[in-house]
Length: 193
Image 1 (cartoon, rainbow, N blue to C red):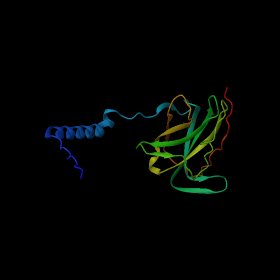
Image 2 (image 1 turned 45 degrees about the horizontal axis):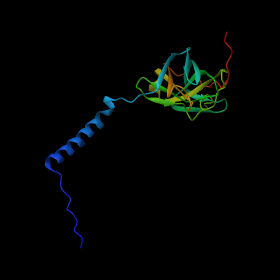
Image 3 (image 1 turned 45 degrees about the vertical axis):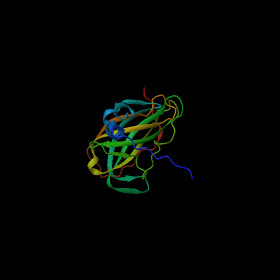
Image 4 (image 1 turned 30 degrees about the vertical axis):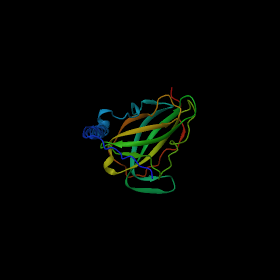
């Protein structure tokens, strides 16, 4: 019959050292976000009417409007909040590229993605290089979100030079119209002088 060696217990000093290491690791893990904050995306800020380059696209935001009813020319859709249409012109820089998403952030920090209850041809469909196209992106927001808003533009380009780049454009919409909002469809933008 084989004899097994009995495992030795750590000394009191060794046990105290192991407990101290576990507590220190917990403290570092708990405070890591404060000591080493996570990096966010690179943000290019622009104003309405100004050009924002967020590689691999360039975008110009012309303005925004709001209404309580959305119309596609055939049907009308009501909302518990408001519909917002943001008028944008976009083009790829050097090779075909798309905008993967847009969101509106209100003054309280809430973000609302472009609506999936409306057609949004400016989102997810590629733009040709240096061929500007203009259209409106539709959002559905609660009524209390109106006022100071920020449009957040996220391009879709896995090989882009600037990782996780975004553009932010400040907008202001104070009231929603009672007339139905019929969004502008995507089309070639008019050439500017």
